[in-house]
Image (cartoon, rainbow, N blue to C red; front, side, top):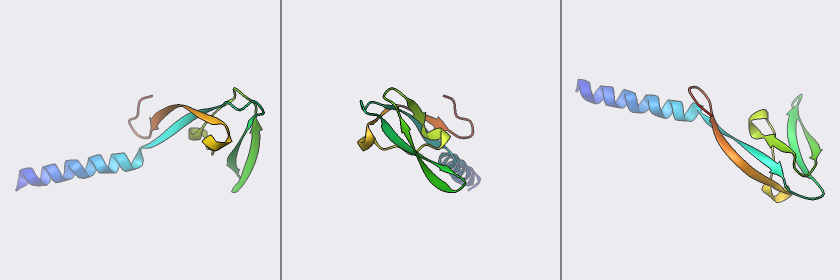
Length: 84
């Protein structure tokens, strides 16, 4: 009984950690005429134009779409205990 409770608590802790951890991605603009991305400023979405080759990260709050010319470069895990 005591051993089962310990396993349940360990599993619950692991699930809690996974829920807190998130994934951030870096994207590069690959479209010749540039790409747009959005970011929240003062509670409002602001659209920003980027040039081909520029890189943004969703970790910094940028919202991008691959349909707008953005290509994912890498994904990194963020949150407590994460390592890049």
